[in-house]
Image: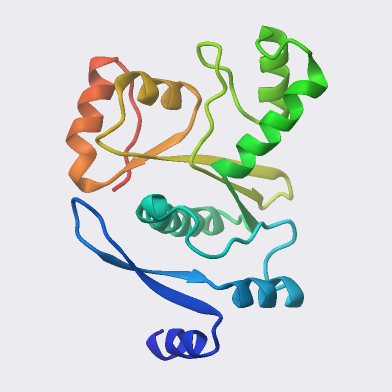
Length: 200
């Protein structure tokens, strides 16, 4: 891949950036440039309906986003291995945007229990303790039988509080964590009598 990456950098379609991290040190990450984004949009190279982003708008979240990309790659292999196709990624940012857009449409009372459930159902989510938890990333795809499928992924870190983790599990998200955080996350789940498979 190295020559391909160098070629894309030379053309100004992608850029490297060294992003510091307080625990693991700096990490070299890649992103599309504005020109790269324009090229993909113009040539319609991305899947239909797939949002494409560029640049480092939130450098503090860049490490988490890079890890989500790895998580997506791992899950995509499983989905395609079971005959899934036409994968589309929806980030938490986009899901929240759609949720907030729907609140005023369904009810003037944003805290209405019925409205929450109707909105959650419309977006394939669940209400947990009166809230609608949103996954870090959702993968939508077509199954082998041509049905619509989806998987909601959450990358849990050792910084998660028990309540947050509980809500994510009860919302039905597929929970994943780093090797360094497995024992802490597992301990929280055990204390709350929840079980969830953790992928490293």
